[in-house]
Every structure is written in C-alpha cells, then in structure tokens.
Image 1 (tube, helix red, strand yellow):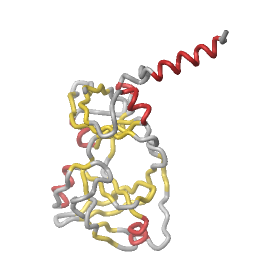
Image 2 (image 1 turned 30 degrees about the horizontal axis):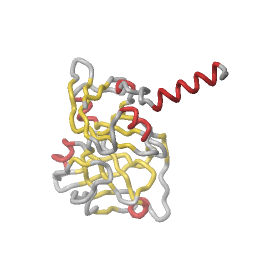
Image 3 (image 1 turned 120 degrees about the horizontal axis):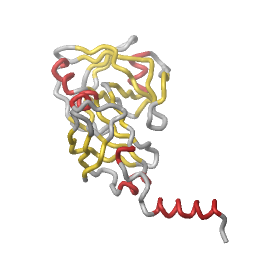
Image 4 (image 1 turned 90 degrees about the horizontal axis):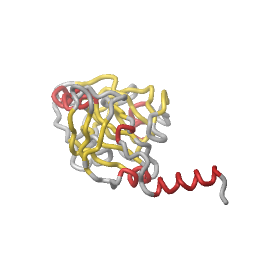
Length: 213
C-alpha cells in the first residue's frame, strides 16, 4: 500500500488534472505598467552606439524580461516625452507603448494593440545619446491582457487569444471587458494593465480581480 506522501502526491496530481487549482482569479498578480520602449538591436546601436548592450536594473515578472537603466526621448509633431524607460532584452522589432493621454502631447493617434501586433501602426521619433531614429511603425497603446502558462489556461478553462471580462474590487472598482488571454509555455501568471486604466478604478498590485466569462 502506498504511504501517506505517495497518496498525497496522487491526490494533488488528480486535482491538477481536474482543473481545480488556481480557479480563483483573485490569486492572479496585477502588473501596472507606464509608457515604455522595446528596441531591436539595430535601433539600440543607432541610438546608443555600435555594440551597445542594455544595462539591467531589475527583473520583471515575465521570464527573461527586465527593466533597464537606459531611457529615451520620444517625439511627435506636437511635442515630446522625456525619460521613457527601455525594457529588455532586445527584440526583432522596436515597439513603443504609450498612454492614451500621450497621444495628445505627441500629436499622434496610436491604436490599442497587443504587444507585437504592429501592422498598420504609426511611427514615432526616438532620440538617444548617440543618435535618433524615425520608426515607420510600432507606436501603440497596450491592450489589457492576462499572461498565463498553458497549464494555468487549462485550470482557468480559457484559451490563448480568448477575450474575457474581469471584475475589479474596491470602492472605485467595476468591470473591464476585452481582456485578452495570452497563454504560452513561457509565461508567468499576471494581469497587465496600464497606469491610466488602473487609476480609473484605483487598481493596485494588491487588488483582487475575478473573471466573468
């Protein structure tokens, strides 16, 4: 007969397979992001010099993602925004994620998109210490979304690309629809939202959210 530890392990595995773990979306961490920049290596070297490597200051919640010491100026027809943080590592394409209010300051209308969905997006000028570059595309407002692993998606009974509605607790709480599920085998569980949308409902990293499918 199996010992207690073996039985406990079997029961835990059965619970996982039944999808009963992590069903409460209030257990999902909340990540609130300000405007930021992702750069290709080629654009990084244009802005900072040949062979330049980003300087990591802290790890982010998603595996292998990190905040950098380096910042840039982003500029549009009507104005500029200074000290916009770069996030690493370098990507295949440069991308600038701004807030809705930034569109008025820059004089550019940016669409709401998921990260990496850059087709048909406007460009913006980036100014660094060693040069500047005019991106032909890549300026977006981030679509709110939930990162999760494929196992998490199974437990929550959702699929990559699904759009769900969430309930946010608190006196200024409410619901947000069109929250996209981003499930991959390299993602960590976290709800991502920008500072404007978070402030509208007094959302903080300790807030509780519930999914309303």
